[in-house]
Amino acid sequence: MAREDNRRDRRERDEAPEFADRLVAINRVSKTVKGGKRFGFAALVVVGDQKGRVGFGKGKAKEVPEAIRKATEQAKRQMIRVPLREGRTLHHDMEGRHGAGRVVMRTAPTGTGIIAGGPMRAVFEMLGIQDVVAKSIGSQNPYNMIRATLNGLQKESSPRQVAQRRGKKVADILPKREDAPADSSHVAEEA
Image (cartoon, rainbow, N blue to C red):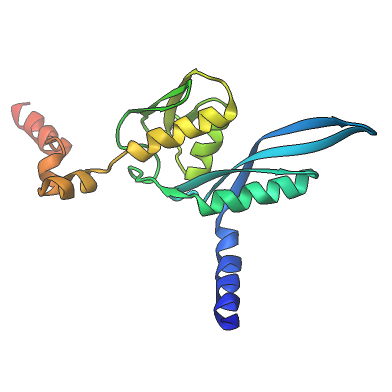
């Protein structure tokens, strides 16, 4: 039993460097007691491998570092995988919802960058997306924005997944595109 625990600890240590984390929000809360006030901290953290996996977590503690540590551990446990097109953008436009939070995410051509607000930007950066246009409509609460973003990202499906679900080939699913070299040779013949 002890040997299995050591292996798991070693695996977790080996995994740790591949994940990047981003502190999205920190909230100080106070409780008034007989002797004065007691302060506590709540942290919201987004963790990702920047290759298509992302998760978020929240942690509460009396000290900031402990709250961040708890949030990071929770985020690593709740990671989701998102298929990316060419490793840089989304496959299709989508909308995500959580409570009063609603977000719209759209694919973007190369060089666009991440056009998104605070908490959504953190999710996209940790996910490894380089080109995306996103808009938050509704709740500006960072917790709701992140949950709505992840809700939308979970709905995304790649052409491979769609083809597999429908029992077809990927080539049958994707729209037919005319090759650019064939067009240029055709123009040269006419001239």
